[in-house]
Length: 173
Image 1 (cartoon, rainbow, N blue to C red):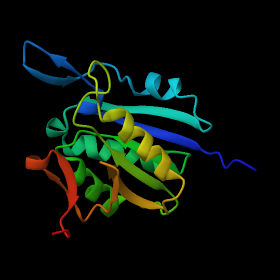
Image 2: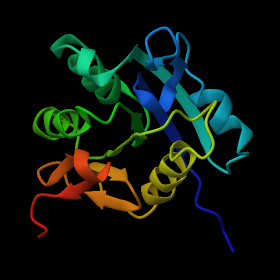
Image 3: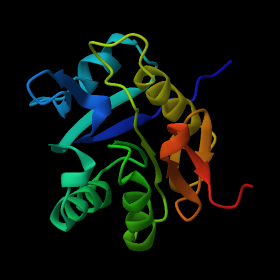
Image 4: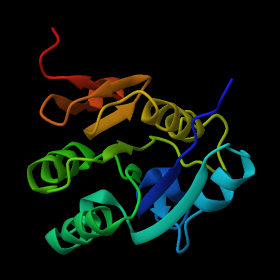
């Protein structure tokens, strides 16, 4: 059986997935340096991996300039399989921004996040989110997607449901 391998380019923006608990603020705050590269490398994936840190911010603190930098990083990537790690609060907005502005049509871009930091907490949904997004890259057609809570969403349908602490489609009842 031949194995289909490719390079996955991780574009890192911070968010809870890449945060730690700060007792003085009584909340999770983004790490100064991402833990995503060391976590992904520990998995011994069959795919090559590349990492670019655009920013390390709570997604509520991301500015239009940050979105432009994410877009530029994706546009200039030599790879066509991209995972964007992001904060949950504005991830749907970023997905819609990327879908509206990404000029390349040969890339599969999957945004993912978690409600609980990937390190320092057990259990965390972060490892599952990263694994799910990575697995989905193989079957999704080029385009922009959000992969979280075991489901793939189109940018135009995804929303965060605070009362359920998960994401859903605006089209579902």
